Image 1 (cartoon, rainbow, N blue to C red):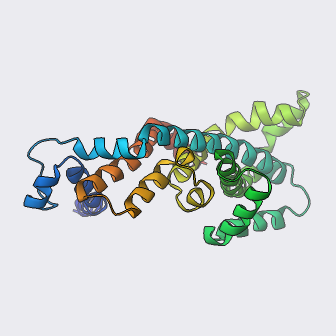
Image 2: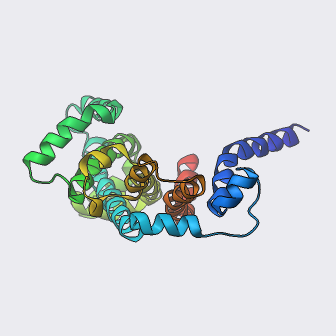
Length: 270
């Protein structure tokens, strides 16, 4: 009886969470005429791609998609590599002042992006990187790697010392120990970080909007947000733009779902 109550609770929670996405999905494939006649809740009489086609052409979606893929993939890879190097020194190397360094990383993650906007804008201008995709990659690599360093340093501090001692006995140096022992054992956790860093960077809006003003450099969320702000959209086109913004992130999540599950399971077993 209790098992059924828990099951139905999860079903009800899933319906509440998925209901807004369902409304967006229905209206994204509905014609503006049917939306005006039947309202936002009705099912589409026929699958209409007019809204998706209009948004695709208006924002040059293919170009924005490549920009988002380039920025998110670069940030995910670089942030994981940087976090591993930092955490290796802090968690396994146990450098002096390790606790204070971790507190500094944690405090940096609590800063709101609004407080970082002007300093980052000023630095990007001074270095000639303003309105370039490289500026966004550098900024979010630093932000994501700070969180990754805090998380991985805690994980590495409990790394089996027997494995490290065995590597030393076999003559492995610090780099060989990192690449041949620490990274392979930690691969599930690193996979989880890669997936989260990619999705978090993909969904970023505020700082990319500040740092990328050229239409050709903008990401998918920024271009769709700017389009919404122009108030030239109908409800079906707005739903279509929301679908175009979220579908790539969902596809990436489903593609790496197995790696994510392995990472969470490995953490639970430990």
